[in-house]
Amino acid sequence: MSIVKDPSLAEQGRLNMEWAENQMPGLMKIKERFEKEKPLEGQRIGMALHITKETGILCRTLKAGGASVAICSCNPLSTQDDVAAALAEEGIETFGKKGETNEEYYDYVNKVLDTKPTITIDDGMDLVTVVHTKRPDLLENIIGGAEETTTGIIRLKAMHAEGALKMPIININDQDTKHLLDNFYGTGQSTLDGVIRATNVLISGKTFVVAGYGDCGKGLASRARGLGANVIVTEVSPFRALQAYFDGFRVMPMGEAAKIGDIFVTVTGDKHVITVDHMKSMKDGAIIANSGHFHNEFDLEGLRKAATETRRIRPSMDQFTLDGKDIYALGEGRLINLAAAEGHPSAVMNFSFCNQSLAMEYIAKNFKGKAPGVYSLPKELDDKVAKLYLDAIGVEFDTLTEEQKAYLTEWREGT
Ligand SMILES: NC(=O)c1ccc[n+]([C@@H]2O[C@H](COP(=O)([O-])OP(=O)(O)OC[C@H]3O[C@@H](n4cnc5c(N)ncnc54)[C@H](O)[C@@H]3O)[C@@H](O)[C@H]2O)c1
Image 1 (spheres, rainbow, N blue to C red):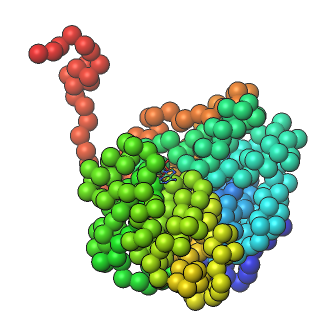
Image 2: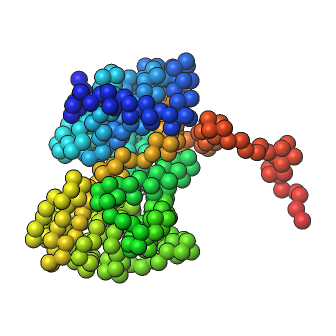
Image 3: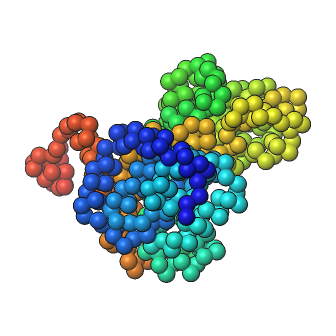
């Protein structure tokens, strides 16, 4: 029995999913094929993903493929309650409410696990962690899983290195059509959308500090520049710092950036990238947000303790008085694009969820008895996912001639 905030929101959820479907033509093609071929017949898919309109289309696609689907959120602030209501009405076991407590969060993870999944989908690895730490009896039914995001992959690899991982898991983030599109274009645009919806400040002319110059940080920095901000990048990787410098951004340690920034956004997958000491050196009125997976990228707990006064100014914006200055923290430190906005645009999630759907089919076909580990999808699936979209929007491109194919696979022909 599903748990959602308000079942009467279902009609709005259906309309939002109708709008998302229009922009996810590749996924709709896969759904059509799944309806005919039923590659997931007999599978029970248990997933912890942000419950958004795009995830709703993924749930429908997997159901069309013959699977039963149960979903909980992978973040307490990211559920779109109207979509959750609509999914529950469509027979997808749905557990999630925007603003759920930590206790409810894990209760819902367990409710999904109660359905005894044969395949898992995670975004951040909380579901699989509960399987391994609290419910290992479920492992005998699970043939494999898929992980969506960078932070989940970091955790999975650490688990595998310790010999603790007991199931095979596909790294969806590894696909070019995931990390080079979702992380770059999706996080780039939707993070700014979140900051703007939370604050409605003018980005133009602001000093905008991006912590982390990975796929997400690159997208965010370029889009903040596009809106007229003066962008500073902080990094710990020499190569990424060099890339940011060659892309025309100022690069400096956070200790320096903290003193001059107006808006700070962390996208590192790391912890305490902005500390309370950094915050103490910030200007009066500085705004801090996070778009990395977990809410520990800036030290909100430390800020709460150190602040002499705290006020909620707007739904996703809290004011903290620190050493006589006001610091504004957005979205309770949760990924701001989902906490204060609607997450990535549907067109970008089309690619991530084409990969998830094809991964489910791949696992159902190939993973029975597969050794535990972190696997990638075959590279040709990347091309397939890209082509599905290009075909749908009517963009044609070149193909290799026979002569070119031969040339690109031989070594004798040179100068
Ligand atoms: N908001 C979203 O919707 C969304 C979407 C995709 C990914 N993510 C999350 O965003 C985070 C970043 O993802 P990514 O794909 O860009 O990862 P990435 O590994 O490509 O990049 C992270 C960068 O942060 C840098 N970094 C690490 N610690 C740092 C520190 N202390 N100071 C400065 N830089 C530091 C790393 O050197 C690296 O270059 C992850 O947590 C990921 O799960 C969020």
